[in-house]
Each structure stands twice: as C-alpha cells, then as structure tokens.
Image (cartoon, rainbow, N blue to C red; front, side):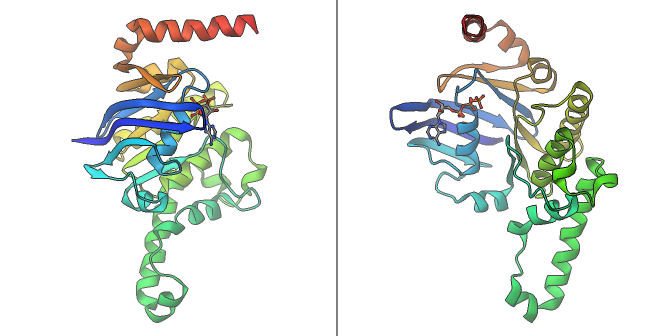
Length: 259
Ligand SMILES: Nc1ncnc2c1ncn2[C@@H]1O[C@H](COP(=O)(O)OP(=O)(O)OP(=O)(O)O)[C@@H](O)[C@H]1O
C-alpha cells in the first residue's frame, strides 16, 4: 500500500506556478527523495504534504485517507511530521526542553483535564518522556541534553531539529535538507540516522537533499522537479540515465557558470 499518493497537485502564487500537475506515489517503508534545481518546487511540495500550503488543484492521500483539507496538527496526529530547512527550535531552551515541546500537539490532557484526571495526565507525561528519551538515545544527544540549542554548532542544531520531528513518533517523516551546511562527518552521521530510522523504526522517509551522492546512496525512489513539473521518477539508476533530468541539471550548471 502506498504511504502517500499525490495526484495532479498544482500550486500557484499569483503568476508563479510552484507546482504543475504533479503525480507520484511513495511506498510505505521506503526512503524517497525529492530533488531538483533551486526554486523547482521541492519545499512547496513538502508544505502541501504537511498542510502549510493548500494546493489549488489535486489530491493528497496518506495511508489511503484524503488529507487535503486537514489542518497541519491533524496531519501530525495522523503520523506525518516534519523537520524544517531553517531550524525551528527555541535557541534559549535546552535540547531536552525543545524535544519535549515538540510533542505538545500529541498531548491530550490540557491544564483542566490534567487537574480532573490526574492519573491519565501522569500516564501521558510518562509516555511523553519515554518518547523524548528514545530520541535522545537514538540521535546520540545524551551529552548535550541540557545545553541551550543556540550554543550548539550548526550541525548539531540540525540534528536536534530532526529529533524534534522524530519525537512525534511519525510513520512518515519529512526532512527538508537535513544535511545542509554540515561537514562530511556530520553528513555521514545524519545518513546513518536516516537509514536507521527507516530500517529500525520502520519509518517512511521523504528527503529533500542537494548532495547527489547522498541522494543516490540512500533513496529507494527519486522524484525530480523542475519549474514545478515532475520531469523524472524512478530508482537512482533510472534517474542517472534520465535525459530530461541530466539536461535540467546541466542547464543549472551552465547558468551558474554564466553568473
Ligand atoms: N509563500 C510563497 N509565496 C510566493 N511564492 C512562493 C512561496 N513559496 C514558494 N514560492 C515560489 O514557488 C517556487 C518554488 O519554490 P520552492 O521553495 O518550493 O522551491 P525549492 O525547490 O524548494 O527551492 P530551494 O532548493 O531553493 O529551496 C519559487 O518560484 C518560489 O519563489
């Protein structure tokens, strides 16, 4: 069964066509990458999946359920979580507190019900804490658990941002350039974490990444966007041979040489 079915999705901002009639499926349990030149529509696509943007046309189903009119926090509760390209953490707060806060949409007991049903609230708090501790172990954040996020090197901040999404225990995790700005050993660590969250925690992973080595090594399938259109879809081997993809990327390199 596909985890995600994107059918004929279009998205427009005034005259800008960010996505044009995009259709693809993501199988449950795979690592799926979205690639394409700058401005191709990759982040817009993730925003449509997480619910930040509403497509002007088309449908998106998660585990067979239509989510197109669902608010972002409802999609999170359904099992979709997201790590942002620009880190969405509170820099004055510790790693631990950021991860705990990341789970607030999962908390059922509000202040009032917490007072009336203290037992249920306590149980929830224990489950909450367990999920956060598991992420700290998994992402090897033990030594920095009490450090304010703003004092960490950038690579570790990116790791905590992924942790914030992981703490929600998603079935589908959306990672927007989780390795951007990392050095090669930090990238290797992140690649290992992505492979492990997929294999050990059975998560379906959607990845936006510019490092083609990483994309080709990690992905089961790749979708290629260019000017909002899907110009390629397939396994890494198929994408390497795809003429439209090759010329889109060569075009980008030529542009860079000119500027
Ligand atoms: N909120 C918005 N308002 C107006 N235009 C937008 C908005 N979000 C995206 N766009 C436009 O949609 C197009 C696709 O942008 P998007 O950020 O999705 O591309 P991208 O492939 O993620 O690029 P990058 O690799 O640079 O992050 C661009 O032309 C962008 O300017």
